[in-house]
Image (tube, rainbow, N blue to C red; front, side, top):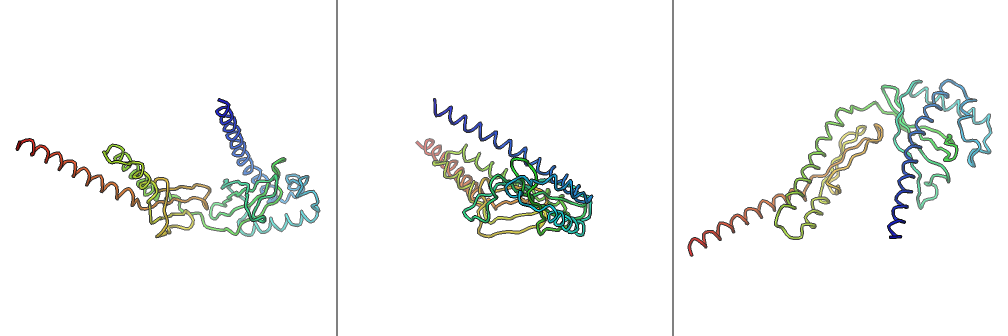
Length: 266
C-alpha cells in the first residue's frame, strides 16, 4: 500500500511539473512577442527592463554595450523580415547532455519561437531565466523561408492515417483469429514498417530505405512551420500477416470441408 501511495504521489508531482512547464512555455511566447515589439519601436530602455539582468548570467552586463547590441539586432531583424509579425511557439526545453557545451545553463529554459511577416518566417532562439521568466539572451536561427503550403501538408496526412488504420485492422484480425503466440504477430505489425517516407511542411518529401517506423507505422509533429512533419512506413508486417491470416482461413475452411467429407463417407 505504501508503494502505491508513493507511486501516486510521484505521478502527481510529475503531472504538476509538466503542467507548469507547459504554462511557462506559452508565457515564453508572449514574453518574446512583447520584447520584440518593444525592440522594433526602438524603446531600448524598456527592452532592458524586460531582460534578466539580476540573474547569474546577466548581473555583470554593461547596459550601454547591451543597448548597442539590441540596436544592431533590431536592424538585422528589420532588414530580413520587416516590422510586424505573427508568433507561434515551436518548443521549449532544458537540454541535458554529456557534452557540457550543449547543456542549457542552470535555472534557464531555451525556447524556440517562430515568427512570420505573412510571406516568410524565421525563428527566435530565446534563453529565459526560470525565476523571473525574463529574457537572458535572444537571437535568430539561420532560417528564412517562404511560408509553406499547409494544405499539401494536411492532405499528405491521409497516407499515414491510412497506414495507422490498416495496422489497427490487421491487429484486430489477428486477435479474432485462432493463431498461436499472437503477441509476436502484434509486435511484427507494430514494428516492421519500412521503408519510411517523411513529408515536412518546409522541406517537402524524403524517404529512407532502411529505416523502421515504430508505433503503428507513423509519427507526427506539429511545432510551427519548421517542425510540422508527417512520417509513415510501408506496413510490411501488417501486409505479411494479413496474407498469412487469409492463408490460415483457407486452410481452416479446407480442413472443415475435409472433415465433413470424411464423416459423410463413414
